[in-house]
Length: 204
Image 1 (spheres, one colour):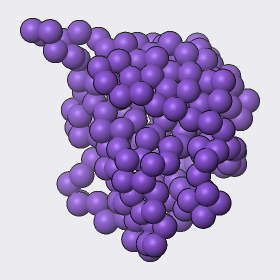
Image 2: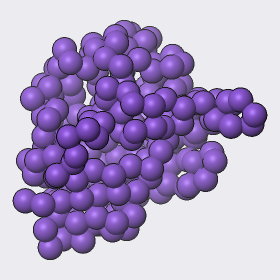
Image 3: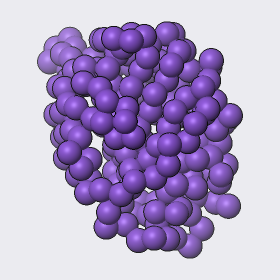
């Protein structure tokens, strides 16, 4: 089934700067694992006839080792104002049931933690922040040359061709995956069921 979502994301995890997961290296969280919260604002999108524009969702992860080693734990929190049809569509996309980049990584997930609903907010701009229920992400970009920002390009498991990196304090305990945020990243994204072959694959 054809789908597409596009918008902005902001994420944090407990890896030390800079998170090695996008380049398939072992996590640097306190227990040697990566626990993260990735908040996606969907500015426009659809799954066949279901309009997903204006919705938000958060992906919660535990990566016990480098990403290609698998055995991931994943769960999703969907904006409470989303309709039942929209929530079902988002879950289906994220679980890889509709094809596209999420399907590529469904085989690496050892445990699906399920779906929760909560109020989600995401502010855009130079220092975006997000809340997912009582969990939070506050992105603080690392400075680059000439007043710019530090970015990562063409990462093997990047959510975007290029994304900004920095610090992102915040706490989350969704699905029992408790952590204190250290690393953060943010970018505009676009995923679809028919991604070009040369497009970077998603990090989930």
